Amino acid sequence: MRITSELICQAADQLKGFVGFNRKTGRYIVRFSEDSFGMDVADDAIIPTCEFVWALGSGPAMSLSRELIQLLLDQNIDDRINITEPLRVYMRRDDMPEISAVRSLVKHAHG
Image 1: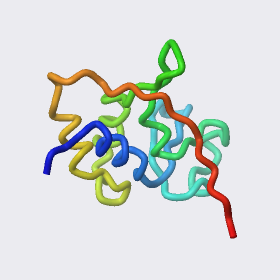
Image 2 (image 1 turned 45 degrees about the horizontal axis):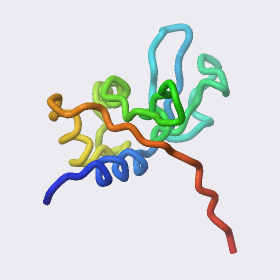
Image 3 (image 1 turned 90 degrees about the vertical axis):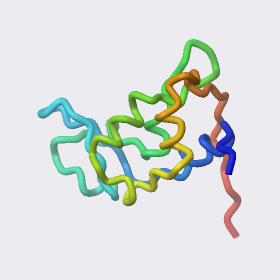
């Protein structure tokens, strides 16, 4: 299977869990519910994992940050947060620049 930028972006959008910044330890941690962080992580410092890996750029485009993906990989919970092969390929391909994309929130209609 050929790994395309589109597949890599889809894999990033399928990441699960929440990332929070623990001010006391100065580290990012991953939990699987927003309620499980406790007092050491402020509510405004909790981000869905699929959003965490995208870094703001200078314009409207965001970059799929290898540094932020590596923070997730370092926690060794790949299966639980759904890190799939397209993201692993992206991390191995240091000859390829980071992916940039203009992203927008898509609201789904319920009912």
